[in-house]
Image 1 (cartoon, rainbow, N blue to C red):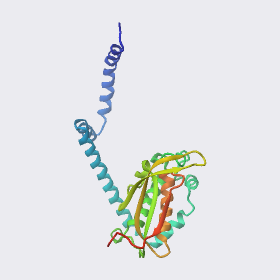
Image 2: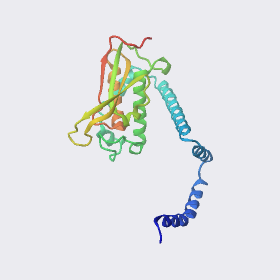
Image 3: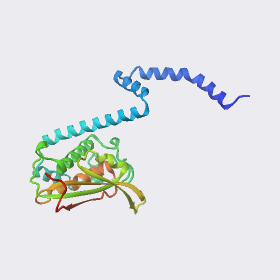
Image 4: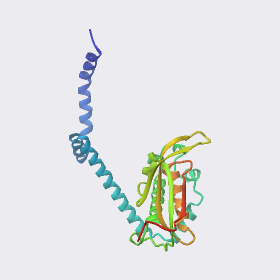
Length: 248
């Protein structure tokens, strides 16, 4: 009498030559360095594999930050540049980003998934990068990045977002992260949360006269939210700090 094990063995026996032929045909067209990396991965144990992935991720972050600093130096960020940024994008919401060809209308609805690169046009990808560069410069820029502000007052920026979306803002540095359970009742029932796993991030920065930095931060976060983070409401606030533990 046949058993399920016998049936499976027979099917595998018939399919193995086809699988081997298709696999060989695929591998023979691949890049040699990629093949070597995959062979090494197969040879490593789980711990070594995790360590290699962690190092590759860290190397990628270092390169991304180095590239951002190069772009900031070329931008020569100052109050006039921030004012032009605010004027250029002051009325940009999701609808306008779609109308002007930065974002596809098929992007996930607000309050749901992150907006992936496949939903942004080339112009949208450039604008998202620019908004992140501006935000980084406003928060952390100094003479080393050709950022020129007369910072007069210490401020604390606090914002919250779901943990699974925190990677969209992983370019931050010198920030404090805390876990928090959030509750959000969505009137449209798209993204109701009951004790959702959120991350609260706090960043100290220097403000200038007229609060141009703060206005730029709000506009930058708004663009990032509409182009990637995709929250219905991205909570953020800025408060003055009379004293700080950051000693220069």
